[in-house]
Amino acid sequence: PNGQRPLRLYQVVADLAARRWNRNGNCLLVVGATYPRELAEVRAIVDDMPFLVPGVGAQGGDVAQAVQNGQTPDGTGLIISSSRAILYASSGEDFATAARAATQQLRDEINRHRAGRSGRAP
Image (cartoon, rainbow, N blue to C red):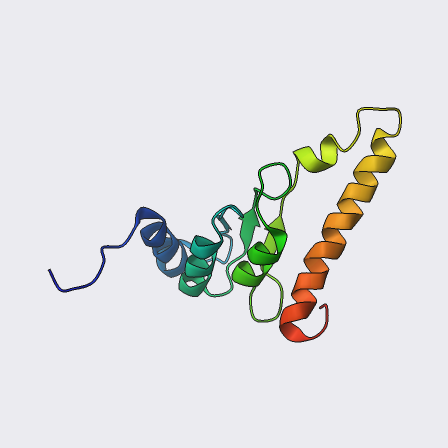
């Protein structure tokens, strides 16, 4: 009626979380890496509230887009989860070594993209 698009449910929930439910600073939102545009929209709504970001690795979410669209201005605010790509990095005797290597590779990729925004990794 007024020319504006109606809000989507995730936008309403993000607004409620930021403005009403997070009075004690103990809330976070789960926002999937497979929806990078929505990740940016939610970040704009909630300011510096932390995000749990599943969906990288086996689910196909892009780490670069997740970091660029979800981080706070100081390069923080994200807990990026990658379960299957780490747990099942190898089915052989070297599974622990492979899981460690996959974890370090993901960490390094996250930090590379954090550095791209501010000029250095925090």
